[in-house]
Amino acid sequence: MQEAFIVVRDLACRRGDRLLFRNLSLSLNAGQALQVAGSNGIGKSSLLRIVAGLAPAFAGSVESQGTIGLVDERPALDPHLPLGKALTFWQGIDGAAGNELSRLGLADLLDVPVRYLSTGQKKRAALSRLIGQKAPIWLLDEPLNGLDGHAVELTEQLAAEHCAAGGIALIASHQPFSLPGMEKLALADFAA
Ligand SMILES: Nc1ncnc2c1ncn2[C@@H]1O[C@H](COP(=O)(O)OP(=O)(O)OP(=O)(O)O)[C@@H](O)[C@H]1O
Image 1 (spheres, protein in one colour):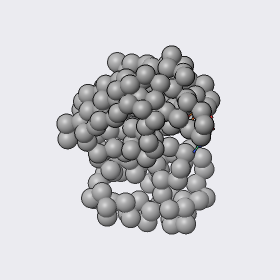
Image 2 (cartoon, rainbow, N blue to C red):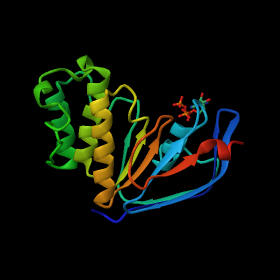
Image 3 (cartoon, protein in one colour):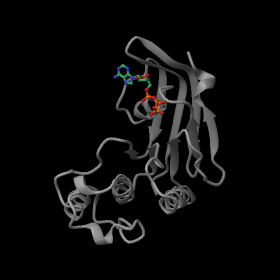
Image 4 (tube, rainbow, N blue to C red):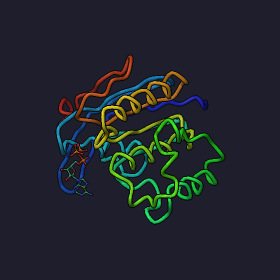
């Protein structure tokens, strides 16, 4: 896996006319995981989007090396395509890859249009695409929302395997996420 890192220095985030957090610094190297915790609206998703380069920092800097895969509430796959075709589209871009279809319980759903999948199935399909992407940096925004107990354990296990293989996981979640050795950052400590 490509050697990856994330270095965030003195980051501040402003959305609209509100400063959400400031003076946030963190650093993640290969194999490390960090959970960003905090209440609704505190800025967890905003932090992930800044790290992904999808939103601007108000102050400070983000430096990273390695391809980034972001999974959030936005649709990861074309809702109009059957699941199999939607994943094949991304395989054409990411390269032919094992998408862990059986493990994720998706093998029997390949003919079903993505828009008809249940909340948990959509979430597992997004994970399947992420795995196919082979990005060393995983940014997971509320990855356990809508998942049943089995899927929660599977998601935690996939994240642990990703880190054991030298990947990085930055996880925004207000609920417990079990991952060996994961550090925790309370975003409230940096509230503006
Ligand atoms: N484009 C925007 N313009 C103005 N305000 C925004 C914008 N995007 C987000 N916000 C506000 O920024 C704040 C932080 O939102 P964000 O989604 O980062 O929080 P969060 O901690 O991920 O919340 P949740 O746990 O509910 O997902 C919220 O008050 C939200 O309304």
